[in-house]
Image (tube, rainbow, N blue to C red; front, side):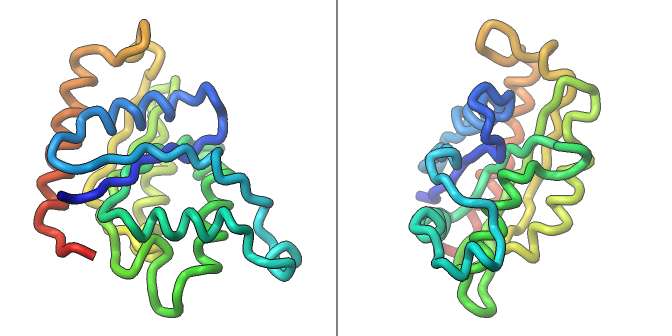
Length: 185
């Protein structure tokens, strides 16, 4: 059975990406899924002076968790057309503990599903495009991206509307199909 790690790139406790990542994880049926709160792994803002003081233990914990999973589902907010500094900081730290010649997320490239949402119609699509372009360099093999615009109209009373739920189910089913043929780590 494949192991999927799902997390939001937001550090806001009420982030709409938290509801999106939980909704995506709930659609996983053929794999084991772990939803991770990156906020539980407090990290200082990356810098060479900070790194010279030593690698934070939470970086090594995150590295081990990512290496232990076969695939990733990431829901990333878009801040001014790019990923939030919080998520970029996690990636920067992971890059510092990657083995030479190996991707940040593990020994081999991991299948990745990238998703985003926003109150506006763009749904974070600009950031998803940039992340999808960078992901191979970080160690991800992007299998799909999903942009959900107009979040407040589609998420009410603690759940997504039926059309969005169906789209999420189809998206995750296709992702699980894509990762089923990937060799085990």
